[in-house]
Each structure stands twice: as structure tokens, then as C-alpha cells.
Image 1 (cartoon, rainbow, N blue to C red):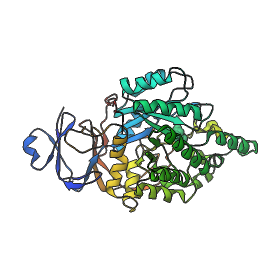
Image 2 (image 1 turned 90 degrees about the vertical axis):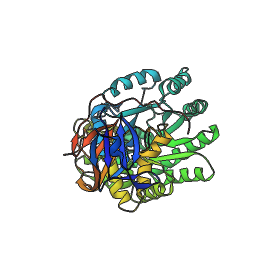
Image 3 (image 1 turned 135 degrees about the vertical axis):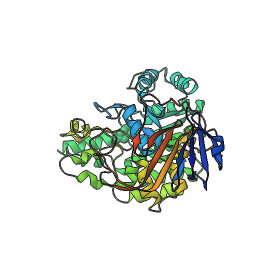
Length: 461
Ligand code: URP
Ligand code: ZN
Ligand code: ZN
């Protein structure tokens, strides 16, 4: 494997910034300092003058090739991870989501098969979609044999992949014994169904009724309930895709009393508001995801929560469905629109432009939220998420001035819509090194199907 010497760049970590060269050999960072050219006679030299050098980002919430609501999310592990690399994301954590009554380990087998195509390194969370006689043993197998150390529970999607409180408590108690992290999608599933049916019964069939069927208080209630269940069982908890002030308040309150609760949010909840659902001609369907995009006001609450450390990571919930032939399943019934949207390629540019350059977060928080903290919370640090000797050579060489405009016409997501269409960005990778290879090289993607490696993770925070 050839070596690479990154010269003249400014290294940015979650805590520091300094000028140094970085030497990459055999897929690892082997030296950081000056005068490294003597140690690297045959290395490819990348001049990173004027660039920021930070760890490859980790997207801890993606759904590649997910069978969901009668469709399959459009990016597979190859296309989705390739789009990620082009945007500076060098590792993903996807969710194994077994069908209700399907053994967890059967679900795992099918995800292992799909993920063989991945161009970037990948790990799995295991969703526990039901709790049977063998589930505790299967969870133990996940942690001890597979390095899957986080479990997902859906409080929404009742009747499909959602669990009730009894099942959730069992997941929490089992995870506690395994020192594993429980994560939760928090929406009151029963109330969602009741509101959906009420709206539909009144002839309200268009995409704009989707957010009205899942208002913020339902997320706030479920977040507070999940936190209470975690408190009673004595476990840490990670809340995925936090979208609203009510959920932020519940997390803040829990943390104030000393409970270990973490929050994740996504660019769409920080940057968009619910006016997107008013678009004519079914275009609002592109934004149908759960929880939905919130009314104006919630975005500021999320930015403050990121800044103040109430919300801890930014992921994408990348789950693209084409507008044509996929979202159209719900043309006459908003309840049937496959939920989800694309975003893996755009996260860093959006967070840099609208977070760092807008003064909402600083550059260290940018690295922490996107790269380092996901690695720490999910048992991948310091192999991932660090510019450190011995870490995997997953490195973004970032041009802080490069301008771009997001569009479905040019993105690499396999999706005919981009929910950030027309958004201007400043800052983009010039080079992305993953596993010690330059995989994004000045605009050229040089990825290899199947080159991504599975990342077994450690348990315990
Ligand atoms: O709408 C969404 N978020 N789709 C993906 C599944 C989930 O709930 O994360
Ligand atoms: Zn979810
Ligand atoms: Zn998701």
C-alpha cells in the first residue's frame, strides 16, 4: 500500500488546531510533525496549503438499501458510501432492521450480505423490532461475537418495526447487562396512528398533512418517556434525530439531574422548516420523513443545543426514496409515502457553511459533532474520529473557500430529489483519504466496490 505525505495543512481536532504534516503508511497515520519527507521517500505528497485537515467524518445514522414502507431505499451500500466519501464521510453506521418476528441474527445476515458492496468502512446498529424468547441471547451474540454494541428501538411505526414500552424495557435491561448503548427513535406511535387516521378520514390526503400527524409534542412526550425508562433501568440513552424544542428540553432536564443522555440531530432539522410541505404538485413528498421537518423556531433551539452540548452528534438519517415511482406510493394517501430523504454527501458542507461560517458552532465543534464524538459514543475511537498516530488513515483535506450549490442534478445520491436543492455551500473536500488511499482526488472519485471493511465496535462509554 503506497504512502502519502500531507504537507502544509492545518490540523483541526475537536480541541486543537495546529500546522503539521501527516504521514500515512499501510492504511494508518504513522507520524505527525515537520520534516517528515525524510521518513517518506516514496510517498505521494499532497500539498494541503490553505486547507484544513481533519478526521474522516462518521455518519452514525444511515439506511442503505432499507426495505421500508413497501419500497427499498434507493442508495445501496456502494452508491451511498461513495456519495459519503465525496462529501468527506469515510465511515457509516447502518441499522440492521429485522422484520417483526424475524430473528435478529437472520436480519444481520442479510445486512452483512448487502454491506459487502460498501466502498467505505461500515458498522451496524441492531434494531430490536420485537422481543421474543431468544432476543436477549441474540443481543448478547451481537455484542460479544459481532462487535455490534448499540441497539435501536423505534417508538414510532407501530404495527411494523415499532416496539411498545414492555419490549423497550426488556431491550434496556438486556443492554444494561451487556454494557451496550440503547438508541431510540422517539415519537408517540399510537398518537401518530390516531392523528393519521383522523386526518385521512377527513379527506386530508396530501403530503402537507404528514407533519400535522406527528407534531412536536409527540416527539417530546416519547423522548421524555424513553428517558424515564432509561432512568428506571439505569442505562445511558442516545436519542436519534432530535428535531424539536420539546425533545431538547427533555434531554436538558435529564442531563441536569445527572442522567447520561445523548442527542443526535441532522442538517434537515437545523436548516429547513415545515413550509417545505406546502410545495405544490406532490413536491412536499420529498420532505416526508419521520419525525417531520418542524415549524420555524425549532431550528434555533437545535442550534443552541448543539452549541451548548445538549445535542452531541450530527448524522444524516440518509434514507433516499425517489420522488417518481417510490414516493408516489402515497400520491393519494400521505400515510403511504415512504419516509426518508438523502443527505450523506451534503452533511459536512452544510454544517461548515451554515454552522461554522454562520457562527453557530465553532470549527472544533464541527469536528467533534461530525467526526470524533460519533466514534467515541459508538466504540470506534481512536481508530476512527482522530488525527492521531496509530489511527486509521481516514482524513479529509478541506478547502474552506470552495463554493458549491447542492442539486439533485449533480449529487451522487441515487435519488431524483435533494431536499437541499439550491443551497449554496462554502467549504468542500479537495481530497478524502479513507483506509490510507486517496478516494476522492480533486473532484475525482476513486472508490472501489467492496473495499470498505466491517468495523467491530467496543461496548461501554
Ligand atoms: O423518515 C425516516 N427517518 N426514515 C428512516 C427511518 C427512520 O425512522 O429513521
Ligand atoms: Zn427514525
Ligand atoms: Zn433513521
